[in-house]
Length: 107
Image 1 (cartoon, rainbow, N blue to C red):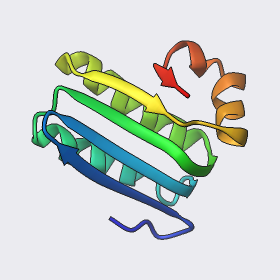
Image 2 (cartoon, rainbow, N blue to C red):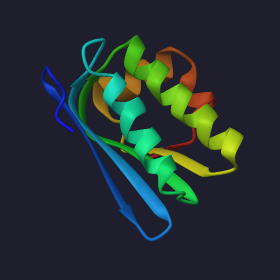
Image 3 (cartoon, rainbow, N blue to C red):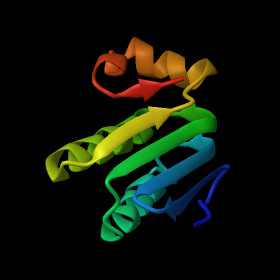
C-alpha cells in the first residue's frame, strides 16, 4: 500500500502476529494508510499487532490519532499491541504529547 506523499505503510502477517511497517513521513495526506493496514491485519485475526516506526521520520497529529485508534481497536478486541522503534523526532512527538504513557512502546 503506497501512500501519496513521502510515506509508505505496509503490512505483513506471520503466524499469529501482524506487523504494520511505517516508513518516511506520516501526516494528514497518508495517515489513513495506518488505519487501512490495521483493518487488513485484524481481518486476518492475529493475536498481536506491532506498529513498526523504525523507518518513520515524521509523524503529525493525524498519525498519532491513527496509532491511538489502532491501539484502542486492539485493546477492544483483546489483541496484543506494541509500537516499536519510535526514535528521533517521532519519539519526541510521542513523549511531548504524553502518549508515551498511553501507547505500549518498545525501543
